[in-house]
Length: 126
Image 1: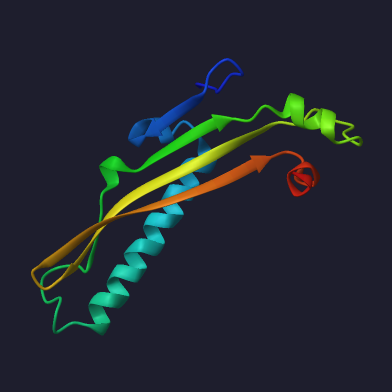
Image 2: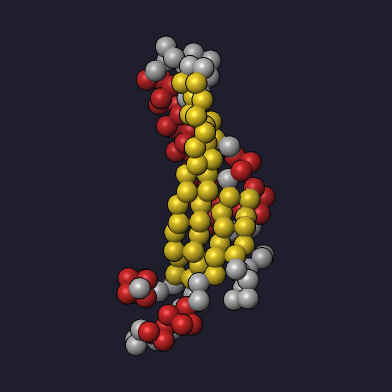
């Protein structure tokens, strides 16, 4: 498995590479399931507009996760009570999608950043 090292800035993961990280694959699978549920709900609610189409299109091929290394070595020096090594990453999630209404289309992107650490107290003190 590829890891983000201190000497590297980040690691970009798309499609098949996401499957190497169980928690990312689980996150993506859960999101896709909710996306399908939302899509079906919109289609059912507005069935007169979406007879043979879906209101939302997910661009599965361009979903990406970018993992950034966090330099916790410097952060832990600022916090006095750190009995364990602190590990963590910043995860930037990019999910492109398209909204369709009749013949109109609009492209958009979900961008979100999540910080994951083995010590939540450190994150709350930053």
